Length: 119
Image 1 (spheres, rainbow, N blue to C red):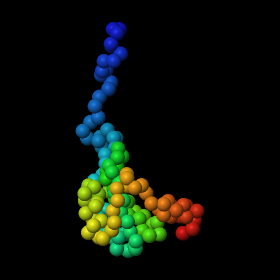
Image 2 (cartoon, one colour):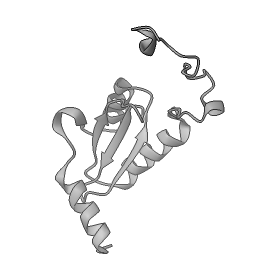
Image 3 (cartoon, rainbow, N blue to C red):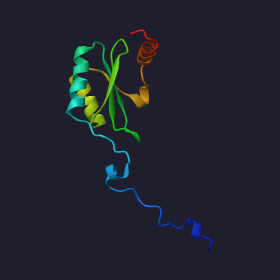
């Protein structure tokens, strides 16, 4: 065994296949029309809604988190950050970058109440 043999690429290591479904690798689902419809319905049926645009991560695409005045919330994938802000402007909903301002406390309070059985 040579000095650098241990660092050479062996035949056992391969690149991930282009077809993620065949290898079992995860693949991020793109936003679709049902996501857009759900977001629009949430905005029209709740009051005091604010939008929080969450950036793309390793496990999810760009998402738009909508939080109502009482902390009830929904999150859906969206095509892009620009699209999310445009959607919020079109529906007269203030929008923020979640990476900058964070998630509102009322959402955490809502989750805590829901978990405790307050709903």
